[in-house]
Image (tube, rainbow, N blue to C red):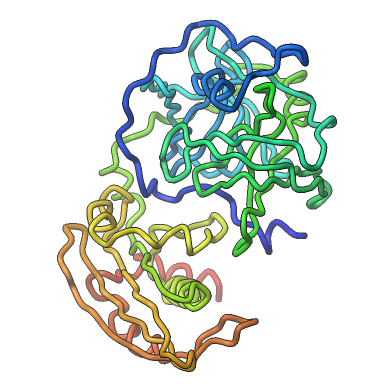
Length: 387
């Protein structure tokens, strides 16, 4: 199994759904105590209460991820892919407290782990378990911020223990979405046994975490020094929008396979035509089912917040025989004004390949470079570089 082929990194590009949270009680200032086998929490609710004050949202100029405090001096673990290309980072706690001076201590692209340091002391921590002791079938709980929804929890099982490009990974059925990256996978004792990393595209709850023993090993040699990379403080949504213009592609359709095929084809076609994609960047492609299925009214309210110039909204369907796919495309500007719309039909996709012919491309092509589908300004320079 190659991570580059089958897995999408669970990182939200341009923070698509940051919802207001009720302030939580501030951290107690004491680490969460290590659990022991004779004092197992009565249930997941107690585990969540213990863990939530140490789980954070890692917000960058690229999007959102999750993380958690592993040392009370402000050391936080997250994924390499969450911070790899970031120029600005902030860390937000469940209490609402935000730290803007963030240092990168270490980052490993192979094991997909990164360690951050914030200027704090006596922080609550999540105890680290022994990932070498986990067994297939164990109950687990994932805590993170999918889509910016802070302190989201999902339960599941250890589904398997596998190797991916030489790295041991723990497979779990606990549900994860973009934004869950870097969140802790907890056992019944409230101990972290994994760090959420990636999932299989178009798979049902095929999620993978990096074993916590990799984290424990790196903590032994982790040193804070003056050479630690210092991120710029995270700027406003307006600044992000100026840096990352493009069209946000979303929508819905039935059956889901038809929508996914059109969605992937749409993003690939626009990207290859030099159109900036607000929810598609150097990161791996996210599951289309996680970028659509929002009410149109909600999407229109979020256009400017995700740093997009416009929204391309698709309604995909099939005729009763499943031989023709219908596609209704609508493009809105950042203020929610309808700029243009097109309807197209296309022969049904081959079920195995999921590739559509070019009927919808012919309808879309005249709009390339027009309002709502702005071509990247450096497209010609990029082409010269390729030549």
